[in-house]
Image (cartoon, rainbow over all chains, first blue to last red; front, side):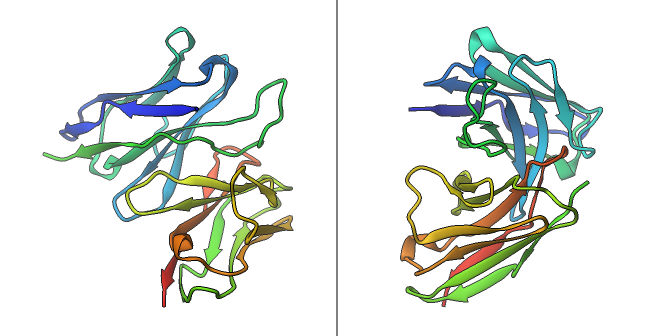
Length: 125
Length: 107
């Protein structure tokens, strides 16, 4: 069974930094593009960032561009989100999510499945 | 950016009712539209992708339809486990965007 597990969340002061991790099991992460999505308390879902299977193509939402950096270590089956210059409005649950399609198998194109359980980031003084 | 607008924002319904949630994109997105279900405290789960294709294990009472800019998720006969929040999402162009969500509540 495919699982994604995020970690690294916590309480951080405004202007601070955190690095989130997402470890995959039951799949070879290097086969898949990955995404980060967040959800502020009581709010909807906000897509943040995409990284291709090789890491060669990356996209960001304007809200985090220049402050957040997505990366991956395929050997460690892991995805990361480095978050700098954190603000109160970055307070949210952060999810990693897989794009199920690959270069050789157009499985559920454009969809996100599975998602991790989420990790809570709280930015407050 | 492509804006995704869902309606209604919330709906109250009873077990056995038929419910339709709509999602409108600010520009054409071909068939790059997915629907997710989220229950309180849980991660979203994929229900439908490419407008009308079912994720494995999704009950047949769920269906997706639409094209271009206007899409819909229909639940033909509500079951107790269907009360949740539903989101549409476009993956036609980056930045990917979600609708604001529709909360389905028990009447």
